[in-house]
Amino acid sequence: MKIEHIAIWAKDVDALCGFYARYFGATVSAKYHNPRRGFTSCFLSFSDGGTRIEVMNIPELKPLASCENVTGLAHFAVSVGSREAVDLLTGRLRADGFRIMGEPRTTGDGYYESTVFDPEGNLIEISV
Image (cartoon, rainbow, N blue to C red; front, top):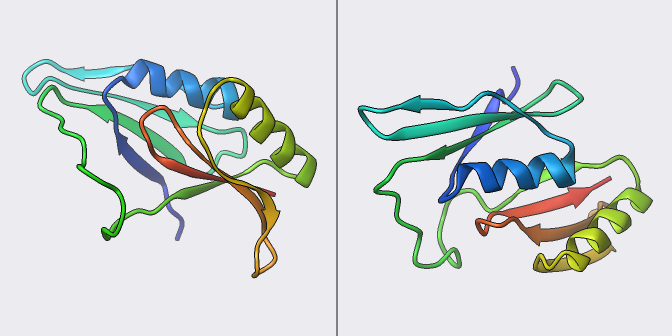
């Protein structure tokens, strides 16, 4: 068994797909649009051929009031292969104005990681 994909609701499908393509090397699928529902989505694929991300939108989409102290998805992790790659990508995202939530560090359970918000406010853990 494996996780085939995770799905993210987004205000701007194109902008979010562009973010993952630019910073994480994702390949963006052709856009799917259901005019009856107003639903739009794209799939993001990565070079390892593993789990994909589906970025979705519907016109009546409303943001959560707060992501603190709620149940549900807390973050997802993207492995970039090395400590140096974690440091470089974190620095690149910072320089481009993205909000770094956690600086690169070794966690208590031995992972080397940083955390950053994507343009829609989803928390990404960048790890080795």
